[in-house]
Image 1 (cartoon, one colour):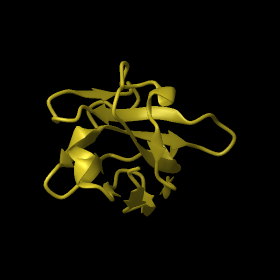
Image 2 (cartoon, helix red, strand yellow):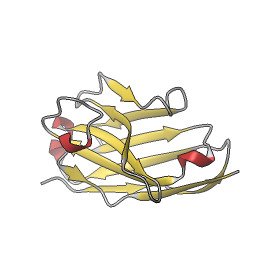
Image 3 (cartoon, helix red, strand yellow):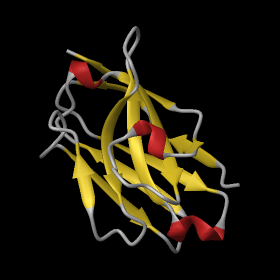
Image 4 (tube, helix red, strand yellow):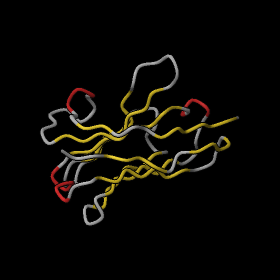
Length: 124
């Protein structure tokens, strides 16, 4: 069972950048499709970005397209989310998630493994 640990969150100003990382415990990380979701206070957890196990396909929520980039380094068992031009509405706890069999990359219930989350706060 893969364990996921996020890092890189923090408090920034609007327009700043952050890079989140998600370290996986297993060398089989390269077999997992991976994604980032986020949850703001009082809201449901929502899809942010996803990447297939090879890294060949990515998917983004419309709200982050052109600003966020998901990537992975299978040699380091690590998933990344580069976040540029941050906005106050990006404030949330960010979770990484992994799944072996993911039919639709943006669907939360397709992922079996979740990290504990990292807080991102963007002030105006």
